[in-house]
Length: 229
Image (cartoon, rainbow, N blue to C red; front, top):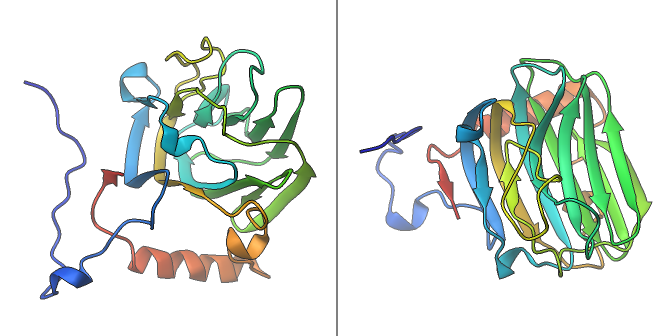
């Protein structure tokens, strides 16, 4: 009695078990494939905090396609009301602008990118480590900043497809549910010394055409399964 969604069974031909596609190596969290959200609470994915996510330095990456861009919609957050012990993270859209916010115990830094359009694919990367935070959109840097930031004492829930920053610390709860799709969310621990180095986060591209070619290659290699690690 219930619902099963997004099951895909696809042939890879005659392959040995060792050649079966695998997920990312040792992620703290991974959602591989595409998940649809309808702007309602029922479609939001909310994960309880785990020790795997209490990382000193890390890299967050995902793709999204919004059905609408007016108002405010949460994408991926690990946040709560107030600053608490820091390590709060929020990514969201508000009135056609993407916001990526890192918040430590006392202050915050926000990266922004305007011009987000409904029905278009976007790739987000964010990283933190060694007293720095950084963000990228579609392979282009949104900047880098100094911030005493990590997830070591972050005990907040992880929300996918909503904004958790109004919840009580350490408790479930969210607002601003997302309407669209989010794909291939990967959160991975990194060496603090080079976590925000561009080469360790995302390839660089000189032109939009080069990035389009990269996405096409990635699509050709895309796994046919959807799973959470």
